[in-house]
Every structure is written in C-alpha cells, then in structure tokens.
Image 1 (cartoon, helix red, strand yellow):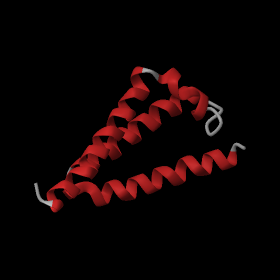
Image 2 (tube, helix red, strand yellow):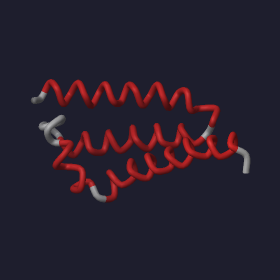
Image 3 (cartoon, helix red, strand yellow):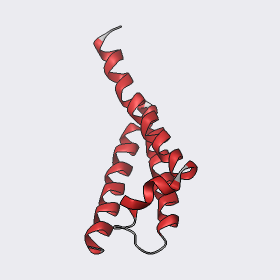
Length: 90
C-alpha cells in the first residue's frame, strides 16, 4: 500500500469513528449527560441528540475525499458552537 493511500484512509477511519460516536448519542444518551449538561443545562437530552446528529453528519462527510473540506468547516463550526455554549453556561 502506498503512503498516499494509507494517509487517505486515516480521515475515513476517523470519520467512521466520529459517526459511530454520533450514533451512540441516540443509543445510549445517558452516557453523554454528565458532560453535555454543563454546556447545555436546559433541554440537555435535546442537545445530546442534536450533538449526535452533528457528529454523525460530520463523520460521514469525512469518509469521502470529496466532502472532507465541508466536514472540516462543519467540524470547526461545531466546536465553536459547543465551546460558546460551555463558556456561556459556566
């Protein structure tokens, strides 16, 4: 396997991992409550599901080289969104 092919697989594997984490928000939302509640104290469960949706979408976008740039932009926006809420609700 060439180095280029190997380096192309890493974002795909990471994307699948992120998508799996996103799906797990729906399967076991209670696992995410303790670290979601500080950033989203009201309607925490709703935000757990929203975060799961974002992570699933960003992860799936990372799988294809054609959508990785969009995934990077979405990922950055997601980090800013969560970080801003965490700072606001401190």
